[in-house]
Each structure stands twice: as C-alpha cells, then as structure tokens.
Amino acid sequence: MDGKTLGTAYSLHDLTVFLQHAGIDGWDELDVAGSDLIEWRGGGPDVWMPFDLCE
Image (cartoon, rainbow, N blue to C red):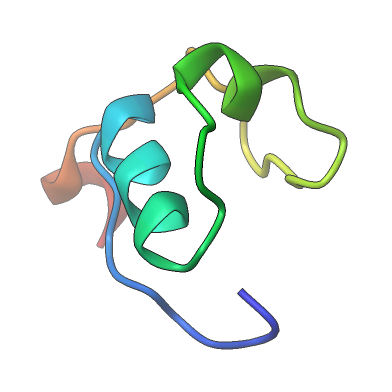
C-alpha cells in the first residue's frame, strides 16, 4: 500500500484483513475482489500460488 509491503497474503481473506488493518474499513472479500484499486499480478483474486512455488 503506497509502495509499502503490508505482509504476505496467502488468500483473498488474508488480503482483506491486511486492508482492514490499513484503514479500509467495511470491505469484505467481494469488495476486495471487485475493486479497481487493486492491481492483480499473475492472475486475479481467485488465483493463489502456494508459497513454495513463489520463491
């Protein structure tokens, strides 16, 4: 967020929690998945790669 790493998300739920902690209150997973504010790289909100394949 704003060029800073908030943590590593392993699911859409994780990302939603990070954003809520960053002050984006009231968003659920559907809001996050459908937001134009998020740039998905290597897939979309339904694509999550196991951590050991990301390294």
